[in-house]
Length: 454
Image (cartoon, rainbow, N blue to C red):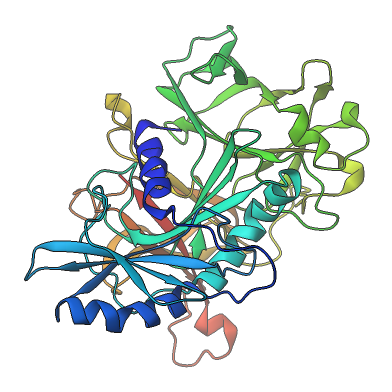
């Protein structure tokens, strides 16, 4: 966890601690219900009171249904140039704290257009919160709705934050929910620059624990970035059995050619929670935005690692057992695609670094496939529908293709952080003919979202 992450968690814990309510059967309320109760009281304090923060109590925290015994609602008055915390409990009157703690992420008003805690909390539960509760009976959940991204300076966006903590095991995971899409931040980020050939390159935590090892036998890269999401279940299908950890490995340049041996480490507890019986049969899976592909590899249960050779692409990785069919695997026989397809970009989110010239601009890869030769246009749009840039325009052969976007517009200027749409239009060269009708004339159109962070 970064220093800024720790500061945020400390602030959240300090802000939300309120007296515990007696245990037993009792009513609960959602964040929106709490705000509805506190709004009139805040308006009695000052007519221009603006909601700037909503957060749960730490004890006992938020339940799996997104409700809590009590919520803290923070308001700011520009006229008085001061803030107050109002506490709404499921029972009893609304109370307030006249001198609130310092350290609000932002004094920007939250407004009314936000997802309530029940829907947001259920998303966090599906992404790994439920597993965390099952593994840690003493788990408590702190939830907060506010502006700000603590580990991205200068970025302000309305977000839900979820912190799952186990006091007994000193274990913690964090989620963030933005615009309806849950994006868990990695617990560990390690970058190596100008990796040498023929040498083991360990990626370790600050305490020295190994996360992964790469050994490049060929190729030349400026940097490799590793993001590790421990105790989180990869997107699965079928029996949902996979080691509770996944990895993003991001090479720079994104289109670099190389061959490497990859070793991924996992914690024994994460394997035990997966319910997989055969630890020696673990394999590596890779997902480049077009579904999981079984890469293979050899497991070493004594060292808690899985190693695969002949790796030529890096993106998102998971560890699972083929017999459990935990991941939806997309197989390819090398034939032409059966239909048009636009894949999810990778990495996503994609972001720029600050330690190297080579990572001044972010890069992401967009892959698409054509069942036949077509006229193709791929464009980037912002959420206002304005075209940012066109990456491809012209004739393309049948088969699989990829294109890289480096986060700049038509003039080469860097665009701001945010959600962008990329659109694929494909069809016959004669598709615009007035004598042509049907799908061939209309062509193929598809769009997907991606998130750029700077």
